[in-house]
Amino acid sequence: MTECDIFTYSGIGRRAVNQDCFKVSLLPEGSLLAVVADGMGGYSCGEVAARVVVDALVDYVEAHCATMPAEDVLAKAFPFADDSLSLKRLALGVRHMGTVAVAAIVTDGRVVLAWLGDCRAYVLRDGRVVCQTEDHSVLNMLRQSGEPTAEQVRKYSSAVTRCLMGEDDADARPSVQSFPLRPADQLLLCSDGLYRGADVPSLPQEDAELTHFL
Image 1 (cartoon, one colour):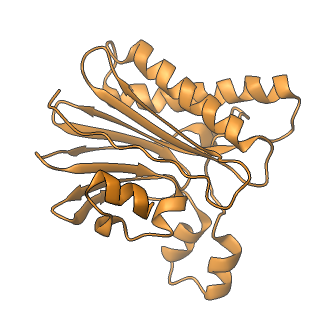
Image 2 (cartoon, one colour; image 1 turned 90 degrees about the horizontal axis):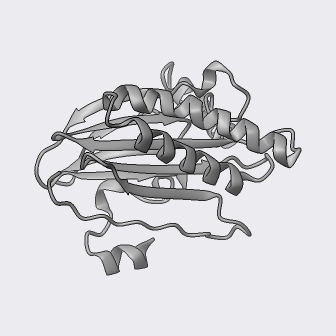
């Protein structure tokens, strides 16, 4: 794999518990895997759900990436992670746990993306967004038929239409897409805590400035 720089950050903000989780892994054949998950508010143990899903996604991809195309391995990793969340939910004895997530495999000059919910992936090139995942959210559905009203934005700002909840249903099948990369492209994976509060293309480029900004 071509050399790249990696920057990670997670901030608790004003919450009592940080429900975001991430992991970056160098895969056996030299590809790179990055995963971000955001536990769903209103359900039990969001931080646990995010960690379970991140670990399960990484475990599945690491175990199968050498024998399966990247698109297939990510498509199957999400239902596997949902099964893992189901076991954790039963072990904890809670009724509902949930998380949204996005994962990326960088391999052979391209990136393969898979996601559920409103975690996002961006490909930035020369300060422009050339690729962005499409949210599985109520607001995104409303935008497809017109501009949401201020009341709809307020009411549905956090409502997702697909996620991982450990309930073994079709919602655990992610959207998957691939995108060619060029030298100096930037890949950004994030939860809504970032893109709701910042213009993604204008993020500072220096590590110290970016950490301070975030």
